[in-house]
Amino acid sequence: MLNKLLLNLKLKKEFLHILYPHSNKLEMLNVECTGYREFYADGSSLSIEINKKWYQTLQNGLFKTGDPMRCVQALAEIGDQNFHIAVNENITSQSPDILVYIKTKNIISQYSFSTISTTISASSLIHNRQDFVDLISSCQDGVSKVFAQFKYSSLRRPLFSDGVAKKLFCLLDMFHKKQDFIA
Image (cartoon, rainbow, N blue to C red; front, side, top):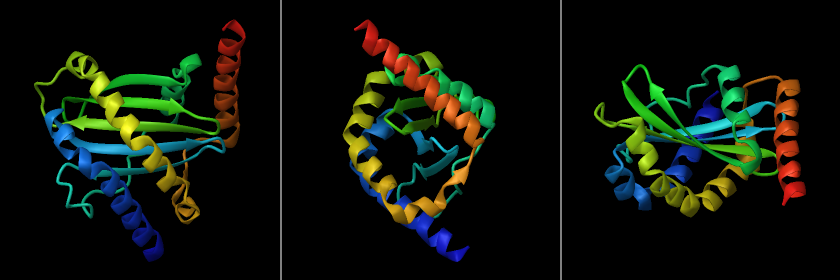
């Protein structure tokens, strides 16, 4: 258990190192918490969150698992573009979150940005979506490389069954192949 805790702290530190150069941009966008999750074809996922107080990486636990079927539903909306932006109205804090999904061969990445203001609307987040896309573009390679390290594979947790994951990835691959055929 202690080893996993230490490993999780190392992962947070590496994630923080990638995000820190963008802290002013995140502040400008009123982002309090930034998260990243990878969904794998075996139904597992690995995730991390960093609070706005960038130095306090010991604060808060792992990404909230949430309802697995809600995750599947959101992931299925990626469709043939291999990219999807969604706004999630956060009921507990009454402020919206923006979620960005990107599918690569065997991994679906989810970036989440939680706002700090109850006066920010979902439409204003969507209006700023290009800022989030640009931020993700500048971080994506670094984050993917960190998460691909074998040492972090032990932090993966099952999210949904292997069968559901295979169907989901197969469906998304079919969308992609259909798009290639049409083009």
